[in-house]
Image (cartoon, rainbow, N blue to C red; front, side, top):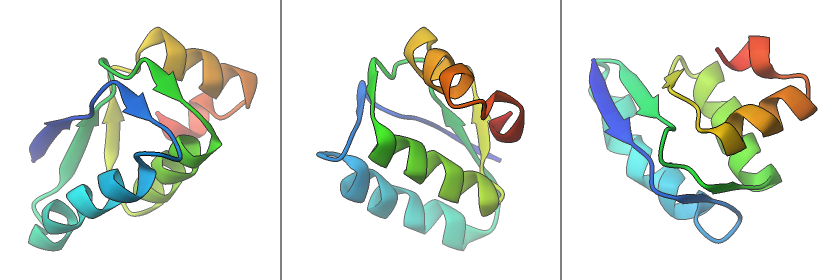
Length: 81
């Protein structure tokens, strides 16, 4: 399994670029784990990216407090962990 740390921003400004960054790892078929510990800004575009990644079997780990707060607020904590 490949572990990939996301940067500090997961917003509409970076979501498309982040999605493209994940493509080669998903195509490799070896499994992908996203480290969310460094994410300091996330919006609904970022949340949508995380939901799509999770549906594709990507494992989400170490959510930062910002990510954890958004997941709690949207009641998606259990679904994304």
